[in-house]
Length: 349
Image 1 (tube, rainbow, N blue to C red):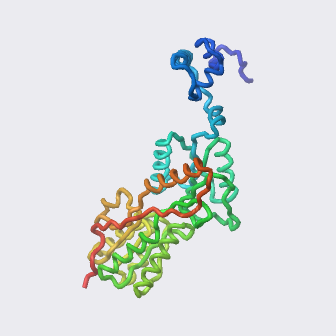
Image 2 (cartoon, helix red, strand yellow; image 1 turned 30 degrees about the vertical axis):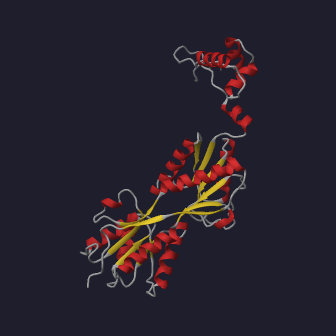
Image 3 (cartoon, rainbow, N blue to C red; image 1 turned 90 degrees about the horizontal axis):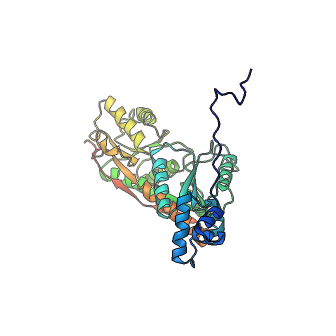
């Protein structure tokens, strides 16, 4: 048998407090509701003494202006949306933090949305929910190809910046200079005297992995060096370890370019277990320059991506669209830098 709602043993539900209205403020301040509205929205033309009286009345009553109504009047909600499929990776977490910081510098808030899958339907749903939450524009961290969705298309929105995609100049795109970073890694190893460079790739569905693999291959072709078969990983240290088991079966393998730092860690572990010294027997280069890369054993030579600059660039381009009303398509590449540490050296003679 269900309990009665008036059971004295049940806690009573508190009555909602009546929200303080603009009329309440006007009555206490002795002004019209229109004057309260003008003060609330920051309009000029209110006598300073009157403005102070209205503000004091707001404070005493605990009045909070209706932010949505104010946003509708000025045509801007000062809220940016971010759509990201992965939140735990070092790159995405750093980029989202940078987006939030850059937005706050311009008095914007950030609303984060994570679709359950990389499909047109899920992405459209995320954008629809963001529009319901009254955002002025969206940063989409695309990072990989849609899952089995050959007809994938971006939602038709006015203000959009896409991070890490294959869209080219169709929309406003921000990305790290993946090709330049991979080429710098290969050229560094060749300059040390290695005959060629082996490669541990990221997953096939990743835009970044594909760009790094193509640049690795082209750099070897341009240098007139043999292109050994690449071995695929999935960004994890475990996959780098497994890939190295295959690469190190080849006695001619003296240099490995790993598509990220975590897989490079797996490569160095596999080499150590085989009694190989890094870098005396095997040189290893990573990509990303995660915070721990300088603490690897030995410290890792890697390509530094400035995730903070990428996040700030997304916000800058998005605000330019919002403020000018122009889409401004095109690709902006954020520079990368090869950081040489102790994991690379000339091959043993």
